[in-house]
Amino acid sequence: MAPTAAADTRQAVLSCVRSSSSSQQIGELFSVDPEGSTPQQWADASLPYNTRLADEIGPLAIVYPRHPGQIAAAIQCADSNGVPAVARSGGHSYGAYSLGGSVKSSPKASSSSSKLDTPRPAEESLIIDMREFRHVDYDAKSQLVRVGSGAMLGELNEELERHGRMVPSGSCPTVGVGGQVLAGGFGLASRAYGLLLDNLVSAEVVLASGETLTVSNKHHPDLFWGIRGAGPSLAIGHSFTFQTHPMPQTVTYFELTLLPRALPASEESAKRATALFSAMQQFRASEHAAPDLGFSWHVTPESTGTEWGTKVEILGQWIGPQDKFDAVMRELETLLRKEGLADFELGKREMSWLESMHNTGGDWTKIADRGPLNVNEHVNFYAKSLLTKHDIPDSSMQAHMTRLLSLSAHHNPSTNVDWFVLSPYLGGESSAVRRHFSGAFGHRDVKMVWELYAKRSDNSHGQSGSNGETDLVEFVNVMAEDLGVVKAVYPAYVDPELGADRFGEMVYGDSLPRLQGLKRRYDPSNVFRQPQTIRAEGRGWGGPVRDWLLILGALAWCCC
Ligand SMILES: Cc1cc2nc3c(=O)[nH]c(=O)nc-3n(C[C@H](O)[C@H](O)[C@H](O)COP(=O)(O)OP(=O)(O)OC[C@H]3O[C@@H](n4cnc5c(N)ncnc54)[C@H](O)[C@@H]3O)c2cc1C
Image (cartoon, rainbow, N blue to C red; front, side, top):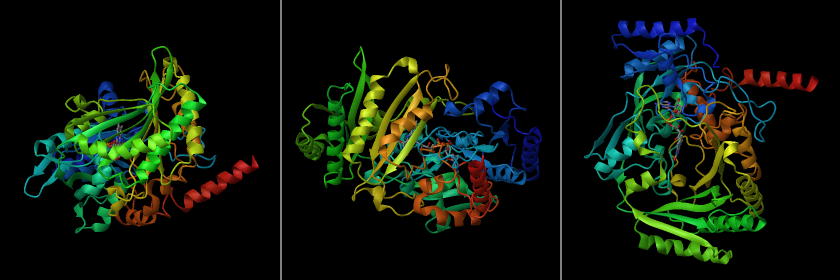
């Protein structure tokens, strides 16, 4: 059961919100909370996208502002009652951070968390749901699009398609614009156009002080820099204006799959998969890995009908027609032959830009089907993201593949775990991700984003599934074991298991010290706090206080 929030704190926050509404004449601010709403309403509004954490979150109340004045009132009521103010846009946070995050601190056995370095637990928070800010307004003259934080990526893409324009983003249609642009936003087109945040021209934000600002390279450039990578730590954005690009006429989607499609678990399979990966590493280093080519490494269990094997493939897209794509791929095919790999299948298909988004994203029908109070998609999962900035040696890759082949061979629906590895390549000298140095996204030298993902097949809620099956966190930690020590993670794939000591540099990279300065300046009382938001050094659980507690903890541990 989620811990019950102190009813008096909740009442104090909500009555503050009500009295600000009438005294400041900002209109009534609709809210849902466990005491004032029906149990069904509260359950609907507060169920996280990631239902693994459904029993661990403890939002105090959820408010649904309709204009910036109401956001400001909610922030100030949270702050004056010592409660964190947390925005929710599309609600897809991997760690349920848009509901405050897990109020339990329970690190799983992990190679990445030491005994003393436990995740920072969340606090019961006031949730500011941004769904009413859902506008998508394209201006043909300036070719800019102004989008509400609560609009979904699919809505943005569909509206721009009507004007023959595009903005690069992740492909999941129901992810919120607000949550993605403030952390990153990559897709198969990122090597050509950069991250979603690289295309941001200005943002309209509400500060901890309640002040509303428009930030851009001209106005408050320091804050504009900071929100592009660490937005949730610094402000609540309600509208974002992006530059747009002409929509590509044609995209060629491809899948290059090792045969047989369900590889058996054997040394030979591990060697062949490693050879494919090695060819991909050489190919992407070559000049032919042009920015118009986006590709990902993909591994997942595949059934032969009678038993389980492993599907190993490179999938991706070329922005352009198939004849040009064929010329680009010839070099990869030559490399494959050099690696002794003849047994593979190359499927390819030309499609429109929007079709390519549909092809790589989730369920687009969910856009129209959005629940009245919350997202209506829920998955029980754990994922770890590792950013690699160097090539993976063959020896590590072969050990990794041996492990995955064995996991697939033991795959069984009764274990209630489905998994995949999906690793987009964002790097290369010509990549737009590398060329942009404009925001606080701290990992411009990234080569690949490794997503190691496991979910409950039956979608039951909670940590242990319906029958106490394999722990998903432990499962993913095992998947990651041969890939080396994790030094960097992708900010938009929040890993709630990261220790409080380590996440700062891993998430924010070299941008961390400057971001701490911005935090001191724009959110001195730390009202925008979540388990992995930035704390200004020297304040609260982020500086000396934490260090002293760690020293005391170490002494207690050593001496007991
Ligand atoms: C199915 C799925 C597919 C995905 N695919 C991709 C992909 O292809 N590429 C990619 O880059 N990422 C991808 N992601 C990750 C996704 O970009 C992040 O989870 C993103 O943060 C979700 O945004 P949201 O608005 O839906 O989430 P939310 O849960 O609403 O917000 C996420 C975080 O941002 C904060 N936040 C939200 N809105 C605001 C605001 N207005 N002001 C300040 N802080 C705010 C929240 O407090 C929270 O900390 C995917 C996630 C899922 C679940």
